[in-house]
Image (cartoon, rainbow, N blue to C red; front, side, top):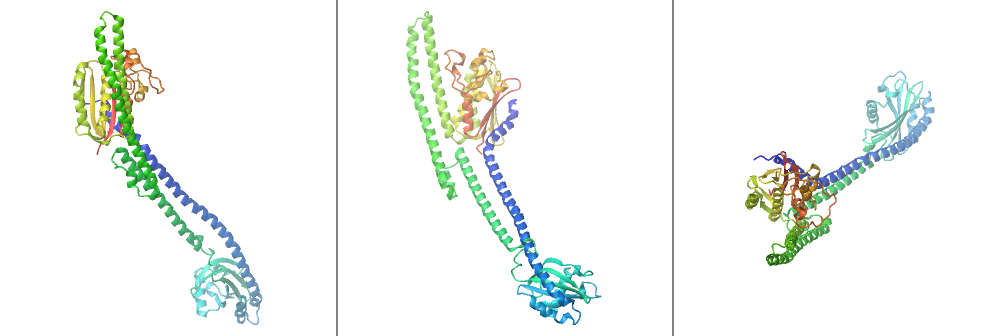
Amino acid sequence: MALAAAKDNGLAASRGQKAAEPRGFGIMRSLISKLILLLVVFCAVPIMLYGEFKQADEEKQNLLLEAVREQGRLIAETLRPLLMREDPSPLLDVQAVVSRLATPHTGVKVLFLPAGEHGVEGFYYVASEPEVPPATLQLERDRLVERGVLDNLVGTCAGEVPIALRHRNPQGDEELLTSIIPITTKAGCWAVITAHAGGAFLGTSIGQPYWQTLEVRIAIIIYLTMAVLTIGVFLTIWRSLMRFRNTARQVRTGTAPPGSFARQNAVPELAVVAQEFDRMTRSLQDSAEDIRRAAEDNAHAFKTPIAIMRQSLEPLQRIVPGDSARGRRALDVIEESIDRLDHLVTCARQLEETTAELLDPPRHEVNLSRLIERMLGAYDEAFANRGLHFQANIKSNVVVRAGEDLIETVIENLIDNAMGVSPPGGAIAVHLSTSSGNALLVVRDHGPGVPENQLERIFERYVSLRGQAAQDGAGQDGAGQDGTSQDGAQAKSEIKPPPVPVAGTPESQHLGIGLWIVRRNLEAVGGGVRAENAPGGGLAVVIWLPLAS
């Protein structure tokens, strides 16, 4: 059969999944955001530091270059009188003067472009310190020509040419050319080039990009190593947290063996934490077992005197004359009070068992299809007595992981709830299907339904509106929705135990915990529940449970 509420089964499943997703996905989002922040910091810090260090290095470069260029100008000015001389020719004395002016770390080279020559090819070496063979000088001149170093001197031969050029001479040694000082004479154009060799300036970034310097390269290697180690530690912690999360999920779903945290932990730093988690798990399991035993013992202790009072009431009913209105009323009040007390003891036991199952919910495979069919069969007589009939559409072999007693309590509350609000001759529809890894069970009645603003509140503890619904004429048999059954009236918003009703009143059997127990039981095993007013009247309660597979 087609249920009006069943069309939203997929939505119900998605809502159930979304209710569990934020915790796991919240951890993932938090870790991913921290990883992104860490990567941003690792990228931003070197960029900022590189800019600051580069600016400081440029200032240092300017100071160094200004000093060495001043040295080059002094050398050129010292050579100027000699180079300006016309007779005798300065060519014979230039080498001796250059050798005297040069230092172990400062080399001097002199080129000459005769008057009337044009183009950089006209330059040739006339002196060099340190001295090199003419063939080597010619090869070096050709390299300077290729690199355009002498282009600015052609045609004008005027004005200093400040440069910072790394140059490898023909011997394979690296030099730093710092300045070219031109001197114009009648004979032609002289060019005095100063160059520095060794490690004094070549260890700096002068004449090359700053990132190519040795200290920057070493810093990059150290920084990258540190970044890799830091991110590696972060990812290791991340992986360990994910293992802990998976272990916690297994413990929660009942698929993990005892001592799971300590057994599955692979991080020495988390060993103490894992042991504490195992102790906490054992403590919760022991507490749940103690609560279950206490609930059973308490219920047995209370049920015995209640049974004795009920038996003792029978002879009193025979003794009191039938025409004694006062005596008969007193007996009725006592009988109803005993029923009320018996109901309270049952509800108290359910509350305690629900608390225990929240601490340590049962987790084993349950064939939900067979369980529902068996339970519906047990309701045949109750349905016939109420003049009700049910419509069932149960998918076969739907297996969930939960506790059979836990699910029975859920189904009993839902069916009893639906029966309590259904008018004589009405129908109760039960639909079981699967969707998105969940088993979906829909129980629909044809009662008065629930106001839209009360749909969530009927699952709250001690929210019972049955009596008010009956007074408002919402339906037959106290029709409406509440926590044990359904009612359609307003309730107080504060969650507190309801006052003890007067025996014999409609609300005397409705404590407002039935649907609250349904929600708590389902959430304990990873499921959920919601309610909606069905088209055409009545309420549809949709529950979902994770499939065993």
